[in-house]
Image 1 (cartoon, rainbow, N blue to C red):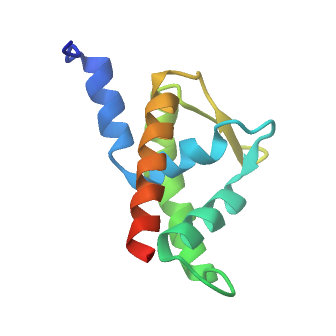
Image 2: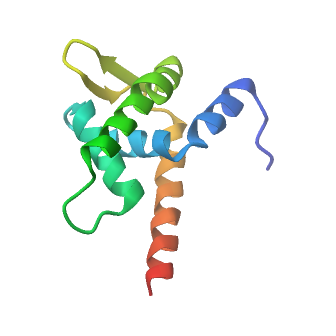
Image 3: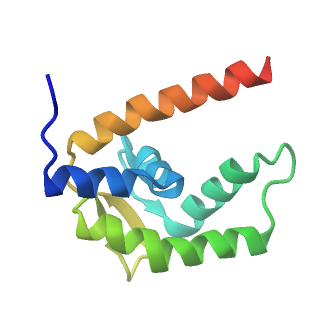
Length: 119
C-alpha cells in the first residue's frame, strides 16, 4: 500500500528530517510536565556531543538554545507540534499526531544503531 504524497505529509517529513527537532519532540513525548528551554537545550547539547563526564559547555548550550529559538521552535509551532510559553520560557507538546509515532520508531532505530556500533 502506497502512502499518498500530500503537502501535510511532506511538511511533516521535512520537520522530522532535522535531528534537533526529532529530539525536541521525543523529549516532550510522554511527559506530564512542560520543560524549560534551558533544560531542553542542555539535554540536546549533551546528546549531540555525547559528553561522558561533566556535561556540555555553556557556549554549547547557548548555541543550541539560539538554534531552538530562531530555527526549530518556530517550525514546530507552525506545524502545531509544539507550544512555547514565552513568559515562562518553557515548551510542551502541541497536538499529538502521527509525527510522534513516526518519531518513536525512528529514535528506536537510532538507538539500536548506536548500541550496535558500540559493541
